[in-house]
Figure (cartoon, rainbow, N blue to C red):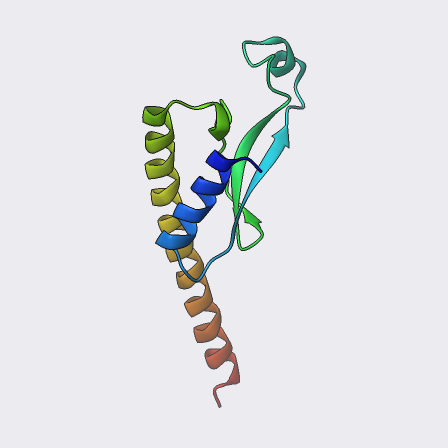
Amino acid sequence: MNKVEERFIDEMSRTFKRNKFKIIKIPFTRPKHKESMYANYAASESLAVDGEQLRISWLPYIKDMSEEDYKHIFDRVREAVKEILHMRKQRNKAGVALKAYKNAP
């Protein structure tokens, strides 16, 4: 991992202190991607939060972004993480409520 990727992970970790983050590469599987303007890249980047991959990805890689693009991607990913963590919390609450309902006399 290079310094820019480390910075991204550090900033995400400071924003969401209870979660673990990892940048992952998602290989292109469609031939049109391999032959397109993304030919310099073999995969897109995404983020895993606590081992769960987000359903977003970006190009160019963080290490190749301008500072302006980096800030833009960071802001968008931060909002996506907030939304995903909120949905996960709601899903967990629903599971607890369902268990309580099933165990009720």
